[in-house]
Image (tube, rainbow, N blue to C red; front, top):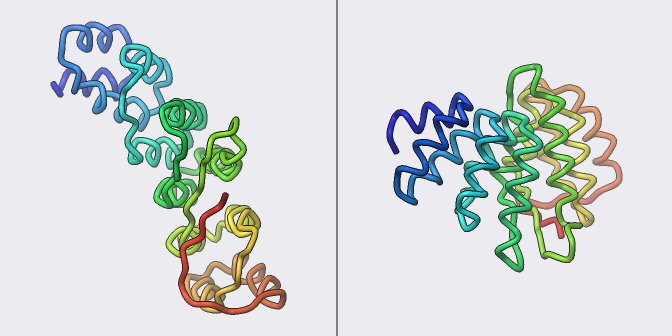
Length: 199
């Protein structure tokens, strides 16, 4: 990908992007899509998908959109991605991107992205699963994100409590998460590290 195309996608310069994409080869679209999604330029994302309806949407592209709180882009790309498959598993990296540290102004949009992803399995008859593992749960402790921790654990229908979560929350100084997990612990059994799939 040329530096000009990368610049156009990153800065949201749609006119320049159109000119460059039309002149260049098919392979440019994936990198341009990544840059546009990462930096929140929905008009560029829309153009690229319209230009090439079979464009590959990499999971890293979804992760950056989620991490930066670009809800409309994340929703559009997930819906575009599942058009071409009968089933899809949203990887834990995309979910984790919704709870990792970010700018203060992105937090509410990250929560909105997480709400969408946790509800994505109700999407028009498509089989969508969401992968959640301990890395996702522990990422909530980095900014004491009890709201997201509750959303994720409550979305797991058969969540079995892992006692080490309480210890991890306390050791990271995530006191809101720690208090909520202590209450939750009273209702659950203990198991080792697992990966959950939300169906």
